[in-house]
Length: 208
Ligand SMILES: [Zn+2]
Image (cartoon, rainbow, N blue to C red; front, top):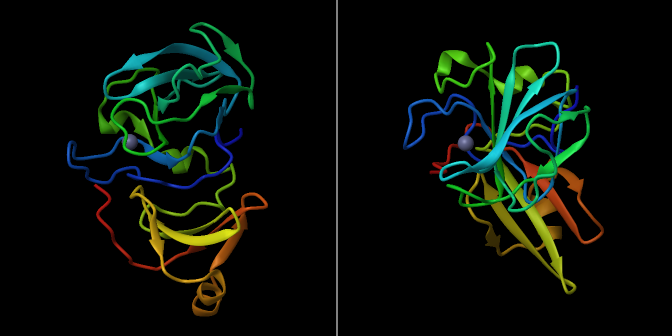
C-alpha cells in the first residue's frame, strides 16, 4: 500500500470533527495543492464524475477487500482514468484541485467499508487508520501551524498557514524565525521554497 499523495498533511477538517454543515466529518481533507493523486493499492475505478459539492470526483475499489475510497475536489480535466478501468498501486489517477465546494486546493478523501457509500459515520474507516502502514511520520494536524517561505524574485517572505485558512504573511525574517523557534521541523520543497512545521500543542483554530 502507498499513501495516495506525496505528503500526508491534514489541511482542513480532520476525520470525525464537527463541521458547520454536518456533525461528523466523514473523511479527511488532505492539504494537496494541484499535486498528483495515486492509486493506494491495485483496484478498479468504479465511478468518475462531477458533483456540485464534491466537484470532480473518483470512486475507487481496492482488490481483495470490500472497501471504496472517494477523492473529491479534483482539478478540472485532470482525471486520467475511466469507470471500470483496472489500476495498479502507485498509478497516477488525477491532480488535486479546488472544484465543487472548496475554498483552497485540497482533496477530501473518505473510505467506506462493506462496499457501499452510505454517508453514515458507522460505515466509514478513519483514513489515518487505513494508511497506518504508509508514511505516518509526516502527518501534522489541521490545527498545527505551518510556516512557508516563498522566495519570490529573491524576496523571501514567511507565511503562516493554520489548517485550511489562507496564507498570512508574517513580518519576520527567516533567520529571526529560526532563532525564535529553533526546534521547528523544516522540510525543503524546492530550491526556492521550504516549509517549516512548527507544532504548537493545543493550539485550536476554527478553520471553518
Ligand atoms: Zn472534507
